[in-house]
Length: 250
Image (cartoon, rainbow, N blue to C red; front, side, top):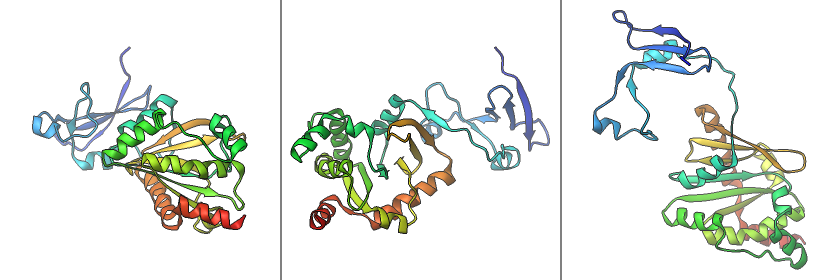
């Protein structure tokens, strides 16, 4: 079925090109302009697919005629799409963890072993560890800051013990007391940020079960999450130092 396109506008005074059109059915914007075909130019494009085309338009066209709506529709992705991000990121992957527990941890046999023995076992050949070792060996950085209560919950103590396995695979694991996180005005949000350009915001229900994963690429929003990351890293301490603090309090 053919698209229903509505002419949006043009800055041209002669032939009507370049111009913008809006797909009335999907809300997508169709950019009409001179194609970019020089191989050396095309080779510089990032994330350019084989079935995609690039066009060149004046900046003024987008400033004057681009959509100005402030309401955004959440981009919800499935688990497979989310997992691929840990294979395709180019420089950094970083997470903030703020919950008092996670349903996925409570369902993990390693958690049950921790409850029984006080130590968490680990299979270094799990897909997560195999991939993280590959990524960090390639020079990429993976890390997270975990917010902990005082005293920590049982789930938080499990993750604190398990942090040594994450660190052995190459992750930079740091901790922050909740009161310090609140003093630093960190939001009570769980998210991953990849390459400082894409955020995967994790939505949990009241039972600590991950329900949806929302991708955010709007630059101003990504900058907000990057500021949260920087503040968390500034105040957090390495997991082994934090574990010593916890043991001292006991």
